[in-house]
Length: 333
Image (cartoon, rainbow, N blue to C red):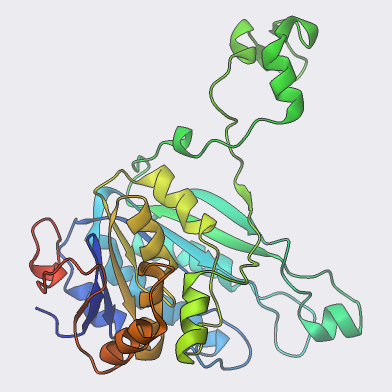
């Protein structure tokens, strides 16, 4: 049993410690989806633990190399990477693309699909090139690489259909008024079934998801106990998309740079088992607030936070069992 478990719920467990060590203890072929967003390769050192840009790809390769055998043969590894500029000049770093090519060329990963997360609420940055000199547009798109072990990972896009546009809704209601089935000049053969209601539209690989949460149980808990919020949180809709598309209820989801454990919270809500690894004990303790009721008394939140900081193993779901998730049936580590 790993001693660094901090808290657990009905479906998952959060561990504080070095992910390189924790990944090595997971059973091979047990993870359905690894979804994570590592500390980005920024020019300035950040408090949550990133390294210099020139070392970044080598550093990240260590984790990917250990992670690959832990995935099921039909499993997936989804990696969210923010962009960066070269130091002192308005030219972009190529590190997200070096990560992509090295993962595939050296580790044997398959690029199942490239996604792009557009955050319309992101503030203009970097300040020097965007706000002051006005030489560049604001950087508001992250690359999200969907890796797999084979060309045939488990996936079902029908689980993440997008709402139909108003025009498509009118077309479905009266197809004859909008189009005639025939082959188009583009080569597309538009048949009579084009107007069928399939419950939604196939989503694109451009995910428009604002990251503008200003309240919620996690933030309320941090404020109540005076805990620092994690500075690089992504919105729940981002892991939700991939968890729904790439896993089924009961599958195992892993986040190796968990931060505030958004991935674990979404996995729990979606009925998936989960494991989260995070180096910072303060961030692990605060992430437990994602799993408690909104009406939890402040005194209870403070006690929970203090006990995790004291490295006690806490059953956040209050299930009454103090059994480690590593010893529970169906969890493979």
